[in-house]
Image (cartoon, rainbow over all chains, first blue to last red):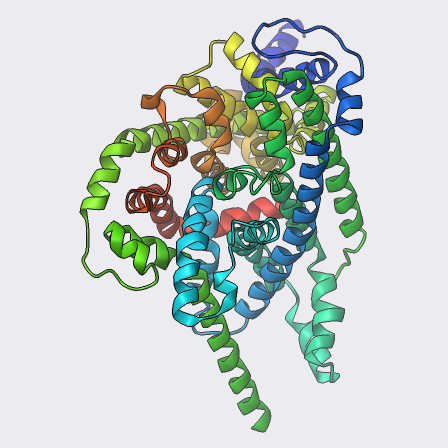
Length: 293
Length: 278
């Protein structure tokens, strides 16, 4: 009996131990330390950290306009980015589940931007916005291309949205395609025989039945856009005038550029709380919309 | 008859619109490739047209400046090393957690699932302190250990869902034949996990290969640069030198695009499987 217990413990350690060890070292300890440092004035260099109570949090909410601005930017970006990329991903999937001759090739093309990392994509698009668009503008005369894309606050915002959608729509398309393929054919045929229009079929049958995919896709899009950093860094670096600085970048700069590690960790904790609340509300909401076929 | 004809016309119109959209999606790649072989003057005056002369020298110079083989080697080593270890560690953990459904293992599972919501940026500042205390800074094994930590929650989660679908009878038969728990895992269970193994491998590869922020915090020496790190450093030095920057970007994106084109089927399946479990 005792031997059996020891061997069970050995097995537990051999099988699960490594996963627990790395998880604790890399995620759990930093997380707990972050909570602690958010109540200190740690500067990251001296190694000394004196407790300051809620001062960091007070400062963030009362005085730090850059954090508020970055938050407002991230919120607007998340709303637009999530909606546009999901609509785009869904309609790409909707049309590419029709019997088109080129559909496999097109699926490949729409997905391809996603395998390239945000950092390199940002640099590629920097060239396109700065040189490519102006070349298109002067040869076609279309004023859309002649805008100073990365130069003004409004256009720089849309530049990031465009690249984000170009990058992520294909990924969501893949998920929506597999969900659309699972919509039972007999229901669609029955609706057609009953004389339902294509819009009615889409609205009353297809969309309710693919809600599980929408739950996943919205979750993914929300967490990508909330956590966006690489693309932001390489495309606009937060400019012009800090107008496109995301929360992730604001946290990064607070700690690693201004050496205010305590304040940075407090921002990081607030960021975590907001991401956790938003994503769990979204999952709860869309899950309640799911139906059985 | 009439309806059928109308349907076909509709399909053709859809097809044409989708093809045009596909071309629109490829335009950035056109700009990237075409301009990467132009002379600097040609590139500034006519970025949209085809190159007047093809300047392969751009590639040779960018290749030398970014020290491309080193960056490629580092990226490969980090991605493959992290992947192999993650798959082994997480498959073992998930298997044992499913088969020994103790209170501890159930709690552990809940903690892993909850941890998937924690954004990297929320813990990166103290992480730097922890990694330097552990002596993981500025070393590739150190970075791999970080990836093991960050990869554990999702990889365990994916394997966990899959192990549940494997019938217990197969393992019982092996146990009767005299295999111990390790033998059962490596000879019987591990081979059965192959479909989920591919999914985990694909998702982790796309993440680790393209990651910039974590390696930028851990690695400092030039000779340890990954492709994203080398690209970023390059842009800091040669801002606006597009005749060098574009070939560097082409070389940077090429490995992962080739990987994608060869592994396409598995990538698509992997994402779908990952999403269904998520």
